[in-house]
Length: 93
Image 1: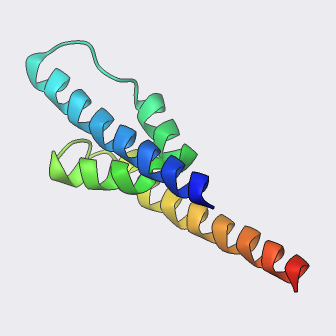
Image 2 (image 1 turned 90 degrees about the vertical axis):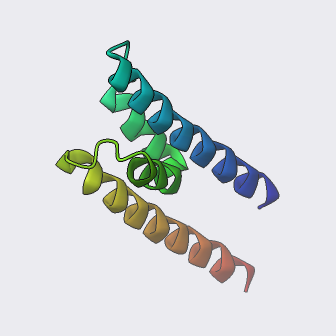
Image 3 (image 1 turned 120 degrees about the vertical axis):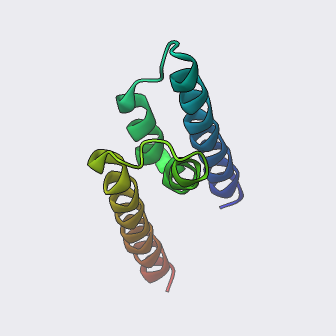
């Protein structure tokens, strides 16, 4: 459980920083982080960091795949966690 928490903290920091970096690159007209990469960071557990980054930096807030996608991914991750947690608990008891 400790390693899961560390992983989630790290992936959310990475997702948050990716949103910041992509926003700065967009402002300067430079190389950008692919949208697929930003979405995959959310899929792999960084959805909270991505959502916070999206609204903190006002980045990708007009694109439905992000303002709908990130929260939807978060909801699915929470449901998956609940299902897995309940399965583990039922095997212990």
